[in-house]
Image 1 (cartoon, rainbow, N blue to C red):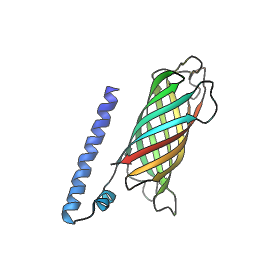
Image 2: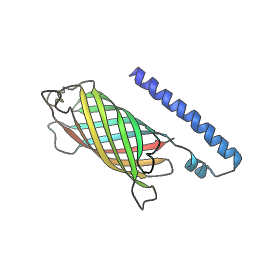
Image 3: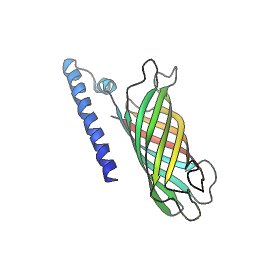
Image 4: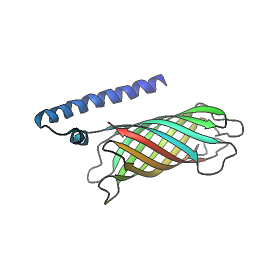
Length: 192
């Protein structure tokens, strides 16, 4: 956990310094409004909060609460596809019991035509480590899990957004017991 936070801090600090230099240089050349200044920033970092509930009835109440960080990469040449790298820390609540989930993996955003960039298809695939995988009546088979998710992302303001995703989590038959957890997730986030 400590190393994850240190790596995250390094990514944020490095990117923020680069964006500040670029943004300050532009704003000193031409006086522009604050909204235009925000619109012209690189905004390569994203933080957000996700909440998820199972898409199917479970034998105990389950929900997830997640904080995530995404680092935007350069779009692939000749495409609208924007790759990202995502790190996340989640709380998995099963009945009255709680466990934590640490994850990382690639994500993508693709603007939907005709929306002027206000609506995007979004997806991710991550590997996770569960601090506990046995909750009594609900077991996940082992600590290593994989997820894939896809959905839609919409702008709220210049640098804020909301997302809906359907997500599937399982251990990919690595362990003897392999239950899946499929969730509907909603998130709010900010680009900086």
